[in-house]
Image (cartoon, rainbow, N blue to C red; front, side, top):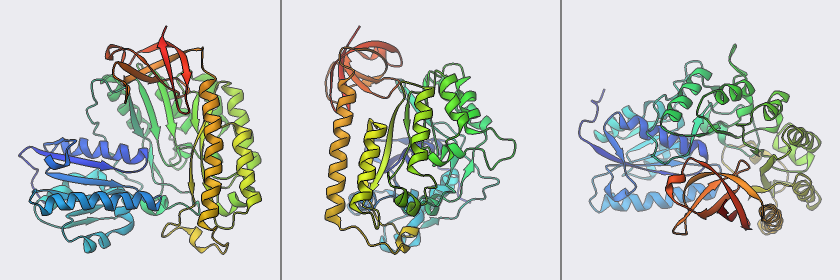
Length: 446
């Protein structure tokens, strides 16, 4: 066994993809911090460079390979750096990455995060390291270390589960992250308390399918019960969660929207398609009609609730009429935003075995453009509808582009920019919206 690293080292982590990867990167930094590593934002200053990767779509994977090329050039030009690939691409490709890149030192999948210290020690000792084994679900060692948050950090992610038991035909997650396992609710609440002690006021619970939390663990809380437990933590002002599966959205979660004012009036609920045949081919296990029932129940429980979603267009065999069902669903629900993509064939996914013909790329592209244009219209109408209204904004920090302007989000996740200073960070202040754009708004403090 390698000895802990004694001299101070610097680690740079380049994160691709979802919020789960963002969370894993934070846990990696926290774990490596116990071995003397400090985080750096400059890869040229790093002793260790890790790429935490996403393989949900081909584009994200190609971005990873491009970035890896830059870091390998640094190493070739004399920088004494250890380079590793983590996350879903590492799990998917495994030893093929070490064979493809002779100067790559370390490859490990998502289940390597709990023992990343040992993997890094071995790699920095000169050993080429590969770890893509899934850990035992019964004793899965969720990382308990909490990364030190920035003095002005408003929110933090807290994982509640890992993996996924759904078999959506387009999705590679069950292959790259393994079967579902829920983290103990006591450990989750302890992490929330630790974050609140550092000043965090907004908690986002994350998992591949948060609605199924705890169902495989006898005696564990359900997801709804977990929401109540987190809401009971003093100092938590706002609770969000992602990602939900409509199949498992229960009445108890709907009730939580009636009972818990800390629960955000914003929900991301991926639908993927508005057509029942396509949903069946995707193995989503709900119909359009059931999805609309869920939306109606949620909005009855929380009248100001707004929703975003995911769409995949051009799924194998999708006809123009079936795509029209997606367009009408977009309007019927009135999503204020969506993440939409052309279907991307991924290795190891069941969709590759479907006999339906692939939709030509230009046809899928035209459908995607049409969907996104309509979504922009809906998003703009929603933000403009705030003009002249006073909204409560939880301040997050400086605006990305405007000096002297700060930004924050409403309970419905609208980003509002307005003049102010950092003394307002982590505070909720009333702001009058003066102008709405497609995704953000401008305002003035009341």
